[in-house]
Image (tube, rainbow, N blue to C red; front, side, top):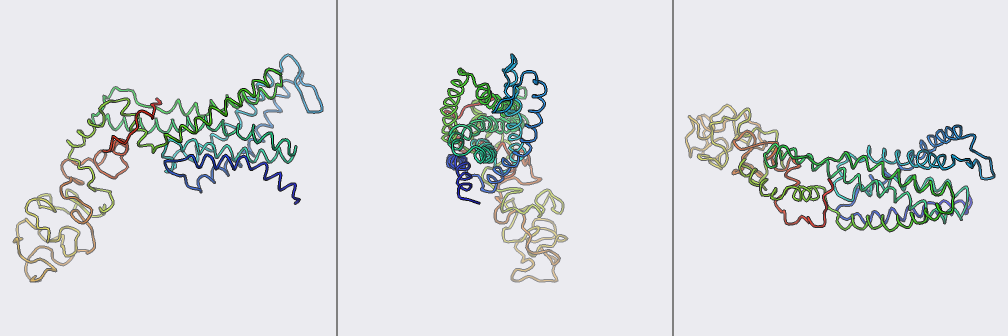
Length: 432
């Protein structure tokens, strides 16, 4: 392997590497895991293989269909008949743009659509750019090794940035799809709570998902078409398009970076824009249901979901529990060390308040008392560290697992938290 070969490989990859670093720096709200970004780059490289196959098949089909219009030259087959504009349109929009952008989109969608790290405005853009630059880097190696340094220099400022520009359109609409779908999910929950009218039209991301594929195909196809036809006017149009893409796409990158925020914040701004006063209505609805924000409950850190709580099997509903009238905090309760499920609990018939219980000083093992042998020590239950006695929990009046279980996967609580003033509704636009 000679030095010239290594240098050409480096020259082919350098533009893609520089642009990847630039996009990574612009990701402000939350940096993406290196493993995920590397995986997207690798998928971008891998889709080059089916791209070459499908492009070869489609090119052969169009060559057969337009055989009467093609002429063999030193540069290969050239279409010189009256249908040349149609031929190059098929070649640019279908053979190149449709195949390549469809494969990029497929890699992007099936790798990230349910990824837990897809949680901010800029994420869709950085994901699409990394897939596209993985593809562009590999493609550039093939061209540079075949045509040399002149091609390396020319493609460094045209084709490689071009692939990134197509990805900017894809990533923008892909992010908008994510935000609108999440906003729609929140709206459905809010309708169930009576916070917003049931007849209101929900946010939907279907349009944005379609545009995330359609717009890159059209821009890419126009880019290639202008070059393939080769007319003087279209060459001028190509450079005009390229300059426009530089200005517009870098502007989009800067703007999305400057306004980057986690998706729950962005969704909140969309909902507040669409439904003025929704935050106050939501707080009133949760207050009426008995929910106490900031208090851990069923399913939160500090709470043991395996231990029965008030209203669950193994707990007597009529017996006072931690924080309720008649309960003695010094006495172990259900699931705590020294508690016997078969023994009457504090406040029930057969238990005298103030009498030492199992494991306490002055306890008489032969006497009937609170908490006899037969309990598994070490279990955590309602009233232990991490549970607020004033907050309703599983099975109690006012508890609703779907809307008031703080800390669960509740997109409503995430989207409309208590610190509403942090939302920047002026710089965040609604994209329904």
